[in-house]
Image 1 (cartoon, rainbow, N blue to C red):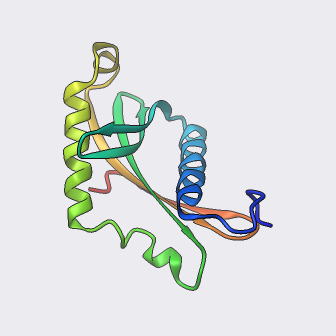
Image 2 (cartoon, rainbow, N blue to C red; image 1 turned 180 degrees about the vertical axis):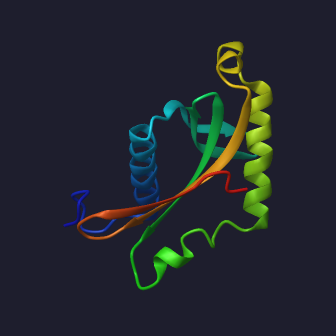
Amino acid sequence: MNLFGFKKLKNNSTGKSGERIAEDYLKSKGYRLVERNWRATFGELDLVMIEGNVLVLVEVKTRINNNGAHRRIFDTIDKRKINKVRQLSSCYYSRADLRIKKLVNSYRIDAVGVLINEKDFQIFHSKNAF
């Protein structure tokens, strides 16, 4: 058993667990949650949060630890994924309702990597990642 109470996490539950860990981490740093898993026809944003007066759109990558995984945790974010997240972010910001737009004056895209071990996890946060 690991810290999530599962013998082995499946891909989907690994990703969801990582998103929960990333959300809790960002909240502990003062970010406020706006939405989880916002969907458009062409993709999804994992987390939408606010830090100060900035809308922060977060891409979360989660990996089960193996040798060197921490060095490669963001490697799966290729140019295609970066372009998709940029498009989604722009789409979200342009469609945001007035109550959100009154709170923020810009947006940025962060990446959060969560590396899960059997007993704990590590978090890697890259502000303004792309």
